[in-house]
Image 1: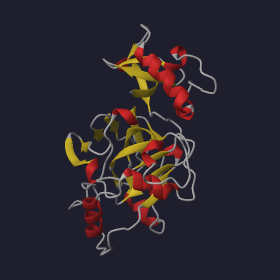
Image 2 (image 1 turned 90 degrees about the horizontal axis):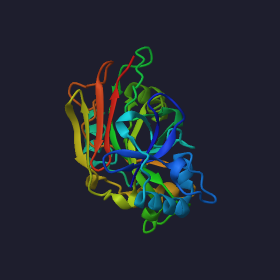
Image 3 (image 1 turned 180 degrees about the vertical axis):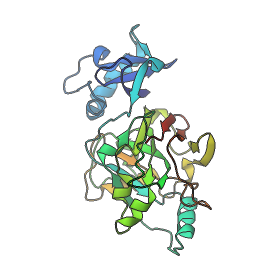
Image 4 (image 1 turned 90 degrees about the vertical axis):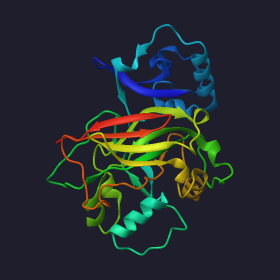
Length: 299
């Protein structure tokens, strides 16, 4: 099952939609059966609605109304346009990316025994086709990072690795767009360089966990049609159960929380010479079975 958050092309409120074959969208708030305790007006409301919300969606998918709209006739937003919390991110989670970064930084670090976590502010979230802002007065070292996004369903704390996948609601595409000099300027921590407005394009859809084999998906990133990253989620160093387990230790994960699981090799700063995005570029981020983000780099 695929879901989107969209608004009518001519303007109007954002609303969640169910994607049918032929890329037709059903307006969920207008057509889902009223369900106690479920708010169908937002994607977060649906995810927080748990099993009851999913039952209503399944019924809607089995017998959709005739009133639908083409995906090409609406504006798509990030599936969760404004997360309730920061987007959790994972660093150095493909072996080749770890090695290229260590080589570029002349760092003889050992392979990590624990995942590296950081976060992106909710205001960084951007739509699947929206412009990524570029302000040369702040930085010009804008880099790309294709990543599989994981959306938490049932929340929990101290989640075991064996139970971790029971807490996944679905998957989406994320580009962890990063300002590299800002990452290093502030004491080597990554939050500032990862959290400028519009630097977390996401979408174009949210695919439910039962509809996708997350462990074997091609992930790729292109700039102006030239492939920069091309790998597969099977090469994740820390797999999803381990990530969810470690992140939830002593910290409650809640329905609608988002985890961006790390990027493969091919990022711009590690190239010789380094390559960075510039105004007018087109950044395309694709994950098999989910879709493609197409984000122009603006001014």
